[in-house]
Length: 281
Image 1 (cartoon, rainbow, N blue to C red):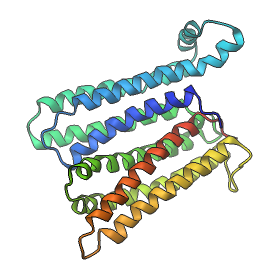
Image 2 (tube, helix red, strand yellow; image 1 turned 135 degrees about the vertical axis):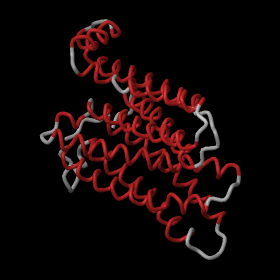
Image 3 (cartoon, helix red, strand yellow; image 1 turned 90 degrees about the vertical axis):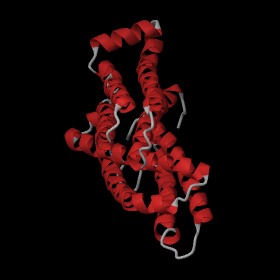
């Protein structure tokens, strides 16, 4: 399970999507006439940097074998293959997200701003769809079904992470979390169920049938990622079904569990990037 520059590249572009998704979720949960342009610009730059790095690290082994200059071969790979441009296409919806953010900077009407935030959410899904199009699932036997499952899986995962990260400012500033968790609890529960179902189906399409092939790096990473996600699900379920419905005020416990859930989900994000850059069985 070698952790290399290709994993860091994938993590960089995935982090960019999460930044845009979290900014969008903040606006949907509590739009206080924020200007989301700067965080979305940061997310776009992370995504673009990650896409370019993924292209370079994809070509690097070929350049090493052929003893060719890396950057020149990367440019040739981009110009002469279909996979090369696919690695950079997620940048296009990210640029569109910047245009939507500029619209939010000048828009005043609450309904119009909410509409722009929902368009940002759809743009995040487009980024993830284009990222999935250049991944392992594109070469599986059930490519179209697998692509759909992978897009839904990635979208629900990013949405879950974005919801949790969007609640962190409340945690840091000492605002009550019970009301916010009640508001998003059912949405998060639905996302988790979809995440589990599509994750199992996607793993099956990749050839990782139960029992998972632990002799393979892919199988071991899949088991580790699943274990981490189960911890996050347990933390989310504890807050949703134990702490929030309690009659007494348990803000301190809710805050501690939410912080733990956020940390675990960030670890899952790292493992997801690692798994993406690991060949399936």
